[in-house]
Length: 357
Image (cartoon, rainbow, N blue to C red):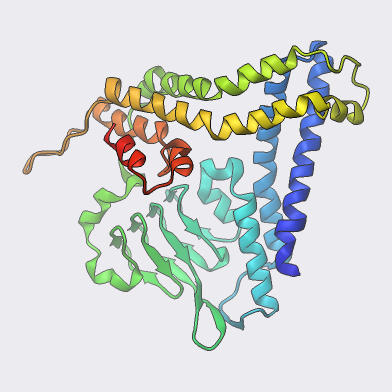
């Protein structure tokens, strides 16, 4: 019963809070503008999204300290009190996320109890848990790795053990650092590795750690990168916005707003429900395809083909060469091809054709 709380209590409450926040912001914006247009909908949606991104991480930080306090080393039985607390915090972490603090993950994990030194770089795909048992030294880089003090044993118990990562170390993509691990200063764990394979750690692995790679200059990102990304965002949302404009021009509900109930009645007008379903369908089907199509055009026309560095030569670190992978990583920010692979399935010929494009 306790394990069902995040799904049947916390998540519905978050949805209700988000909905009520949106209704209040929508009513306020409508009263300021004097009309209910698509622009009012957009402003209310983005404002609600911003407030929720601020609220979610601090809700999780508060919940972690209230439910567990500090994680401590030791062994506990599965399905005991300590296990249920650990499970609850883990599910809340998945549910609430880092929100706006995703831009400063070291601060986020420090607020959760981790000891993190200065200059640490953590990619947003890195998975950290049991935060009070993490000791990460200065200038460490974590790239899509898993750092987890939680381990299971054969006696029906789970164990929490400290993890220490020495100064100036790096952990590359898909590597795992398990409970009880101690990485000496300057350790460079390669991709698809673990703390049990430290004999394979070598300084050359630093080149494969993405957070340590040089970034393009700010002027190039502002003048070229951000406008390209803004156009992609506008194109991606255009089907939803067009449908929203059509909905806002309807006259099914013309009364003025005086309370939350009026706002709910306006949104939930029966004739408007088809539009609400249409927003969801377009956002999950058409919008990913538009985002990927735009990314492919930019890749072929602006970014160009990537070529390997000839053997014996130094890599080209000019501003443009640094900008190209930076831009592509933001046009296609995940392994799902902007969400298209979730629609088609990852193992079909269509996905292979998209990669060839």
